[in-house]
Image 1: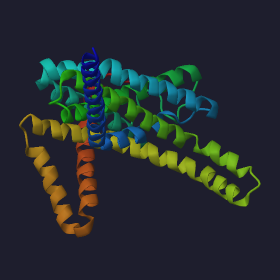
Image 2: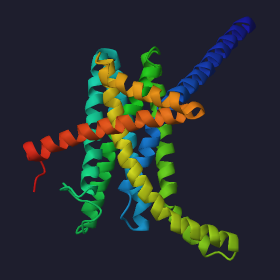
Image 3: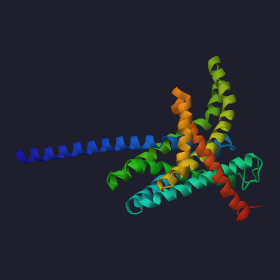
Image 4: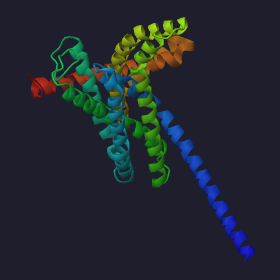
Length: 312
């Protein structure tokens, strides 16, 4: 009996060590997969604050929470099962679907640019009077969740590519970990950004002169920061959407557009020496944004001028 008990304990110990190693492997894989999607995470964080502007302070956090819940549903209920099913049965369909999502981002970004340049707008803009606050809030949340779906799909696809050789169950766990971690990171950052003016107001009312100075600085800086983030968010839609299209075309065998973008990138890198890494990335992002703007403008023209969708 003692030997049997010892053997059983040894087996339990081995299973426990194997489980711990498996958890460590999942953690490492999730970190690696998440880091690969860092660019899209930054874009997501830049895009989202634009959906939370024009609301009273008491509604900002509830709206962010609603968008964050929608983002989790996007990742865990819609995209995670879809990614696993596609990777198992229709791996060839992932790239075309991502390209459709990228084209939607291009369209969204181009619409915002056209509106800013004085073109006809379709739907509510920040300059329109808000007649029904509840309906406006609902529309903003829905718009943010739709955009998040595309960005989340890109994040999950990048993560999936990094763990494609893992067993199906492990892939599912890693994608879930990445999805939850990135959602917490993005919407935690967004909450901090949009509430920073309230922090500034609180600090400006304290007795300490240093706190007051910092508070006044935050109060002055936050409107400008939100404006910058709104612009960055629009540009992010274009460069992510354009980048998805360029990469997708390359995956489908049409290397020309991507080769041209990389040629421009390499030319700038060679000309900038020590700054090559930064300028190269910025150049490729800029080329992707131009591609996204052109494609998005074409889609907008077809929808609104040819098919008359959303025309007034």
